[in-house]
Length: 201
Ligand code: ZN
Image: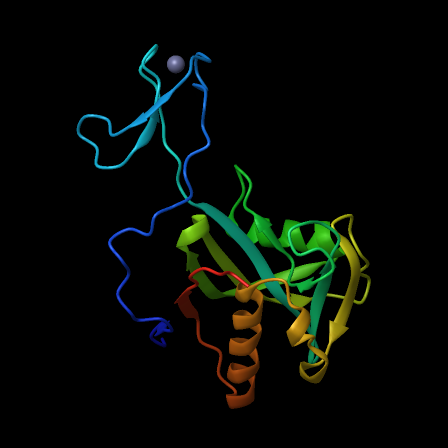
């Protein structure tokens, strides 16, 4: 068993200030909320003084995969904002009621109509300034029967030399591809943890 490689070992700040809450109304009774630190808590929350409900906002999980067929990698050209027209790996927000693997498979199907076998969890990135955690799996593209899904302009298999480094949509994608190529070159894949600080791109 290999140790998990620590990619970004610098100490985190006490708490990176997340984006200001946009919550205006109680999701239980519809009354206006106030933003304050509830008794016994240490952070500002959206508090409903009418019914007592506290709306907690916590990070979202983005899950995806790096589909490989032979020596080539599946990339998707985004047909949606943000980063319209730039290249990415199939990934998206995890849905309620699914596992990480199911989410990664679903995103590959939605964005690339790609049938994948999900392998090992490969990269995990904290992205605190947008309150997200990104989790990417290695995956095997089962066949060549893929095509652009509704969120993609184009889907293609690329060799390492063909990766459009200047046109990648997200830092998570770039760093996941970099790790993959380095690990593949030395013949040993290990999971990678890291942090991504603003700006994302
Ligand atoms: Zn309420």
